[in-house]
Amino acid sequence: MLPVRRALEVLWRVVSVALTVAFVASSSASCGGEVVLAGSSAQTQPPETPTPPAPRLPLMQSLWPRSVGRVVIEVDYGPGAAPYVGAVPGVGNTWNILAANARRLFQGSGKSLVIPSTLGEMQRIEVTGRDFTLEDLVAITRRTRNNVSTAATATFHVIFLDGYYVDAAGVRRTDLLGGHLEGMGVIVVFKPVVASTAANAAAWVPAVVEQATLVHELGHAVGLVDGGIAPVRGHHDVAHPHHCTSNMCVMNAWNEGASAAAAFVARVTATGNSVLFDDACLEDAAAAIAAAR
Ligand SMILES: [Zn+2]
Ligand SMILES: [Zn+2]
Image (cartoon, rainbow, N blue to C red; front, side):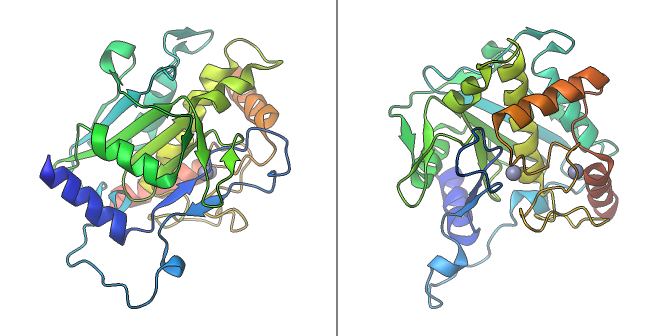
């Protein structure tokens, strides 16, 4: 559909498209924290680059008004990359984790949420290859996204891929669990990295890590922390931009690798609290909701 494509192209040009690392899932040399990889950021463009007229607001700034009554999360998966579904001990349906956190994030907003929980509610897409550049990811969402945001509906597009992100330097990032395309409401999960958290862990760990990855990226996609919505109190980890200083919060930078991610989810599941955001992050969302009234 041309309008969809055109809107995405505008966003692609205008918004500084960045792929944000969800968690560093290995204890390799990349443990310095989450990496924000600029796609077409301002510093890579000459100053004379023409700016397209009338750019749309990035999603994280446009979704809060009460007039946006619905939030739809579309989930697509490539061959060999189907999301974990079904029961997880102590959690019930795996996708309850994302749903519970999205509900809590938007609490008081009056928005209705549409989130799938079974593979039947998700779409299998044709994707080839094992390595995905930023341009590949943009091309995939352009080709496969069925829902576009309107004045009344904000949409997110989640894509599960059986492969890895290849960064601007051409390096295959086997440590990267997921990312998001800034301003576009697109979340990507790199399945082999998620699956790698099964090593020396309880059977349910990869499924919960996968859900935590989705929650983390949804947090970024809606503007946490200081990524479109302003922090109410000082919890922005400036050393790891757009992350939360609390290590009890899903928006923490997770710089200790897969074992830390697994430990976090085990800790949170043990508390019986399915909300992975801390109070500071929830406060930011509540303030955005209140300001948009
Ligand atoms: Zn992050
Ligand atoms: Zn937080």
